[in-house]
Length: 240
Ligand SMILES: [Fe+2]
Image (tube, rainbow, N blue to C red):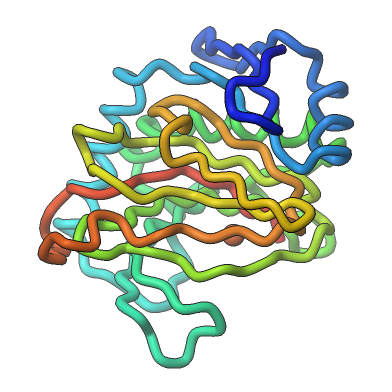
């Protein structure tokens, strides 16, 4: 364990094609995140593997119709919607890894990484969540989110601690290549921690789920164009 960004523990990680290994046992990481609020897993997924997912999901979002609500995998563009609780501008790709709710090609592309995320999240948070609804109707809901260059952002917000306890954010894009500035910020005990320069493609931010957090505008001085791939991209796995 090391501390490159003051206050944030950085833990080496790797992926063997099925699961994520961490230099510190998952149980200890869970205790650390509950105590400190934040940790960063470095190199959890190889960038070339994620590049294929980024390109594939972007192409799918450009060639299928957006939908506000759907029973199956779908995507939607939100540009400062007036009714939303927290102001935001992003393109969310919302997947359901249940039979019949996703096409086979996309399932093959994204399931391995989301499965490794699921297992890590369950191990760290001591939950037993999956992609199919449990008796209470709760499930993990895989999402790929584009905060587009030209001002993609998400205002400050919090989530209830339960049932998720620990949130994972996989970096799916590379600063300097896919976007130039902007990133995720967390507030812990009146101090703001920015991951703009430390959250590389393949790294996973772990955060205690009730911490205030937000995304600063991505490349705010550029023109917003929803047909462009440019922006900051993440993979997340909300559980509710
Ligand atoms: Fe959030």
